[in-house]
Length: 305
Image 1 (tube, rainbow, N blue to C red):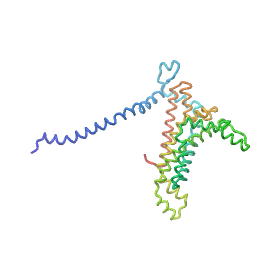
Image 2 (cartoon, rainbow, N blue to C red):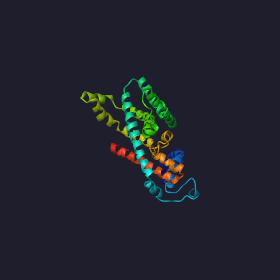
Image 3 (cartoon, rainbow, N blue to C red):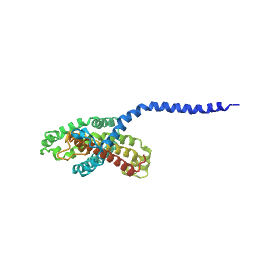
Image 4 (tube, rainbow, N blue to C red):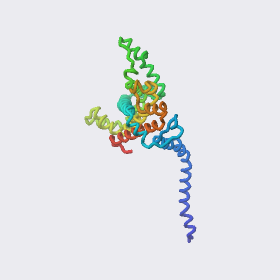
């Protein structure tokens, strides 16, 4: 006969073992939690706090930072330069990320589908070369190509056309093209992997049933890679919203406010005018735009997270 104390001891052993495994797992995760707390959660919480203060780099406000409530946001929405920056950001995002990188990346991936591996490898290396190049190097390359005595104007003069001050006359178009050149490779890689996963037998069956190439693409391929399309749109959008180095090095946000997107406007307020609290509030709006656009993508494409 088993005594009650022995029975309790046997039933408690698995519980102790599970508890020990849980503690061990938590200890292994502890370093990653500490890193997340220091480098991710901590800065986010500080950003929220500083956005509601008059934190400054100089002056009396730098000595005694005070909580100012929603004053930074009220001033922001009353500032005409902020509204201009939002419009410039939307234009830059629409043509650079959605129309440019997304569509061009898909076309390149579609053209390379089922092509010779050596051909795909060569084209892939050429396109990816732009992607792996640092933003500041990309900016200098495009400035050298587009400036008054640059390569493009030399070509125009060779064929009898007048040179154009591209960075002054078409500044937004110039930075959009530079960013498309820099970022299209990422979209191409995402779409290439997605298209390779579409079973060839399904496309062949649709063709046998009389579907055209466009119908196969629109009604079969695109719905099957919808998840990859949305993922790529979100990643490209968030990357494009944060582009600073490329625009600042090419045009400095000008001429005037022609290319002053929100990151440029935020930098000017925080580190040129020394209003860190105001600049932090602008960064929160930028973050909010990224979240809202991502949710819009998920909602419009009916993709579950």
